[in-house]
Image (cartoon, rainbow, N blue to C red; front, side):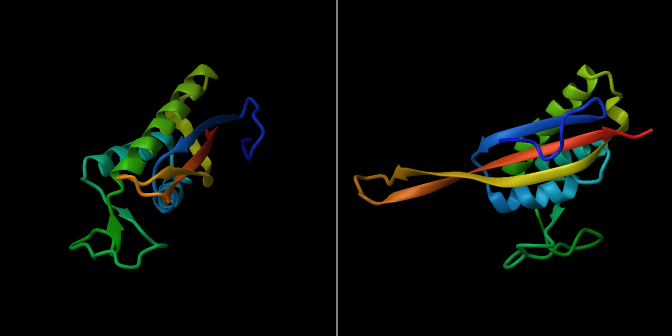
Length: 146
């Protein structure tokens, strides 16, 4: 799998491959972190994992309950997907430090979730039919803003 942007000294890249999470949740989280500074994106993901901050679902919002108060109207806490995205963001932070950039100034300019392969596996209790497990890839690209 290739990155959408060529690697050079201006950009910092990170990718997660074959993650066993919901593809729809990863799309929502990719939209959430896109355009944010790296420390703010990490803070958002930690808030989702600790159930302190819900993520607004602008797409795929059928059947989602509403939140009270000043929170977004249709929101959920995708904990499992947020753990994977947090790992990718930590990797992006480490890659920025390795390239000599200041991680506090890195802004996420591109984040994308892609559907991976569907691997079949057998159902339990000797049944012959199979389940298909979908895997997801995600790539994040940051650029140091001054």
